[in-house]
Image 1 (spheres, rainbow, N blue to C red):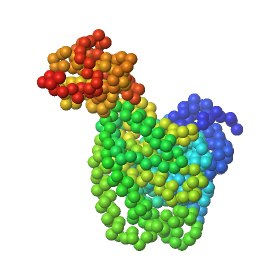
Image 2: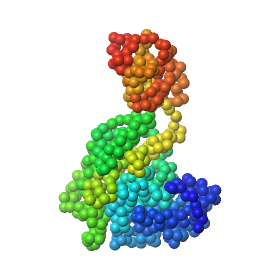
Image 3: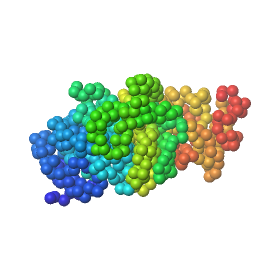
Image 4: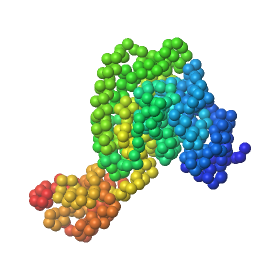
Amino acid sequence: MKVLNLPQTLSIAELKEKYESGEWTPVDVVEEIVKRAEEDKDFNIWITPPTMELIQPYLEDLREMDPGQKPLWGIPFAIKDNIDLAGVPTTAGCAEYAYTPDEHATVVKRLIDAGAIPVGKANLDQFATGLVGTRSPYGEARNALNPELISGGSSSGSAVSVARGLVAFALGTDTAGSGRVPAALNRLVGYKPSLGAWPVKGVVPACASLDCVTVFVNGLGDAMLVDEVVRGFDAKDPWSKKVKRRGDALPEKILLVKEPLTFFGPFAEQYKRAWEAAVERVEKLGIPIEYIKGSYLSEAAATLYDGPWVAERWASLGEFITANENVAFPVTEKVLRSGANSEYDAASVFKAMHQLQAFKQKAHGQLKNAVLIMPTSGGTWTRDEVRENPIKTNSDMGLYTNHCNLLDLCALAVPGEDAGEDLPFGITLFSSSDNEHYITGLADLFLNGRRPKGEAETTLIAVCGLHMRGFPLEKQMLEHGAVFVREAKTAPVYKMIKLPSDPPKPGLIRQERGASIQLEIWEMPLAKLGSFATLIPSPLGIGKVLLEDGSEVSGFICEGNAEGEDISHIGSWRHVGASNVGSSL
């Protein structure tokens, strides 16, 4: 067998490049994957593991394909074992439930037709009921970075297979967060398209009205390649919709919830700090931020397991559970049987539907031109801790995910800065079902600093006087295409003077020690900056302004030899009285 120098994790782009150069072949890569799978068997990634016997027919099919016409030619992928692969048992994590399908699930067929190679069926929380990755008779899937921690679920094996470098991408499913939580816990990107955008024909239902097929990858670009292949209406799927994803764009604003967030588990403090760091990073993207009341999101989320939607799981699996008592994983059976509760009658279902419709309308109104950002998870647990308290720990993992599909939102989970050593942390971007282009565009900016193609490059401008909102020269900002971003403060190294102009203006002079001055941050197209700068009279000009958080942005500065009354103690031009600055204010 040829010895390959495969990287620790795989990407579609690198595999395609190596295939084109002839350095690697799909057979070489698959042989290495089979070897790695055997070495990683203690991670409990697979239900049907990779073998040459399983994969060989797909390798042979590649010989009849033109790589230039097949966007995923030779790309290995894993399939969560509640999604059908023809000729291979689908267990949904329960051997007694298993059946062997004659045809592929629609998404699997589209991937194989595009040249992708299915290498195995991945472990999962039984019947896709769980967010922890420990609810499987095939073993607890272990976190790819720290095996003592949970992997997240229910798409546990799928996520770990990508994070351990066994595949370039993996299919999961998502009803309550199963395509996002494992991504965050294993430092991956997890993409959950809008309901119906990817067909669910050939997927064992959890809550059929809410189920989505998802993808785990190491980079955003790979997720978009997979999306291009599998997206599209399927007339044989009653849940399928025609949902077109537009070209990447940036939202007009970013939404954050104003209520204090909850962090849990043994790493709560580390997760809190990681979230605060993520927010600081978001604040520097140059997009206005608005804080909203998020309590209704939690009310909507509660409907999934503490309301009648759990009865939908029972509708799908109740007959099997009743006929096969004590076959299901104990905690899974307990959750499923709660759906048979007599209080979940037709009236309760309609009551919940009506309440959810109001929540949905509110969410889609807020997200019309916006993206909501939340932690993907408020913490994590060791596998021992989950075993000791399986219900509460699992419930906590869905704190920031359960509302998503109930409100018909799209979502994209991306890594933030790690909360600690081998302790990944992630955020999720949400928007309405017709705004997938906003979450992908914003994610690319957050992860890679790239703005969507065709969008004018911009720069941040700090203003502290008559160009602020409500002042006479605000119109110059607007005429030059500037958009208000946020309020901010300088570092305490400035003197603010009142220049003897008509009308009076403030001037910021940098010095070794000084005051912290309030200002506004605006975003202006770079193409407009030159003409704007010509309007600024001496001794003012555009230079670098040091902010309180240590970052620097372009902004108004004043020549050091300028003369004027020192008003640094006032701290803001807004606090200068009208009698002191002239009638023009």
